[in-house]
Image (cartoon, rainbow, N blue to C red; front, top):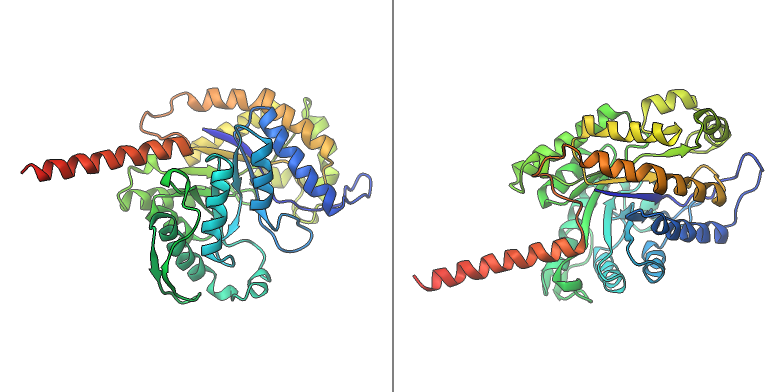
Length: 373
């Protein structure tokens, strides 16, 4: 199982000081946070994609390419790549290039995003959101797997004998997660291709998340990729920790109450009860996160949101120390207990390459046997 963090890259005022970081400071902070994630033993760093204030990560592959040179083990991912408004040809080439730079430590999470105005900015219509996601990914899937593609669709110009370059590293595309909060069509899409499904459940009750995961697992099995338990699932969540739970609540409350995405709605207590937000001690975070398996089943990736709501970089780095030193080691051990043998590990480039070669070997063996008949 993989543990990591994801960032939405928001530029938010610190309500305790009244200071708002500059875009430059926020970008540099995200880099420092990713490097810290590797230092404390986490597996994944993921960045969102946004094209509007108050967010800064408009070019995820630029940031991840830089981080590839600054890290050695960390899987570098997006927590959303906008499959609706990005050209699938450009996605294919950008992420294949990133694969080579990072020696395979790359995967990608496809999503529609949560900002309606982004569609006309890139010449698209939000009413076509689901159809764009379906058509664009169908093309992207082919571009990574077929050396020459001839294609015609509804939402972009046709391709005639086109080859995307560079080709994926070792002939194996980056692993794809389809991220969705509320769209069953995206869970269906993930199941159809046998890809991963990531439910970013930070604003949703577990009942809704469980329903979406159950749909994905059932449809994954329906399309013949394996049993429901073998489907690849990822979850989000957000935490704030101090060694004393009362201190954690006291420190985080002004950030929660004033953050644009949290404030002026439910109370901190109500929100923590209704969503995965956990504010307390490391032990409370461990217990809450372990409870996710009760309704999601065994899953492969857990990402935490920690650098949000105006929290200063120093505080976020302290949170990562607690996460890496006290929380994740226990989670690794406990999640491994009673994990069914048929449940697959989290996907890695090495594992995908090995599976592809094994599959090619079986095909060659079958062809040889046919030739001897």
